[in-house]
Length: 255
Image (cartoon, one colour):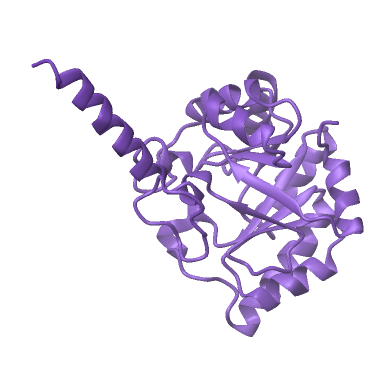
């Protein structure tokens, strides 16, 4: 049975962990779906892992739709959620509606993810959910704010922690179906998780979230340097390089 947003909330109540990974093309999406991943996120991290940019900021809405459509074609069971990229939703509520609507219509995803919390995103998310567009929230370290926040852990001071708690509660009230907590202290993530009725999905936020997400390229050893909280489960860089070297030897054998 296909995963739905309401099923995720049921799983939180049942304390059933939610497994999330990223995908950027059809083959990866197909493999993740066959492996039983619950949520497949077409993250704007693909700007870095698949397209070679130094940050997520350069990727366009058109590029995200292109990749999300390929991912959607490879998925039969998982819930597919796509990031709205930088400056495709921050200018106005109407811009966000247009961008999210295109993502659902043209890419076939079941939800969109927006970075940021109270007060900036509350009106936008409320309007999107009112018209039937499922939204996943994202607070803590928000990569689209890299030039302001860097990649430092967020929520370390009492005032910053309280702000994130208030943002989480406001986002739940606005209608998000789940909330990504990125690179915040584990005790803060546990507190937020306990206060919400919607599931939290952690990335570098400890083990007490309702689910976990990592960038697939990191766990497969396809990135130059995985973040400290990402366990590397395979070294595909080495495997692929070895295979290509063997192929080259075979081709050149008759020279």
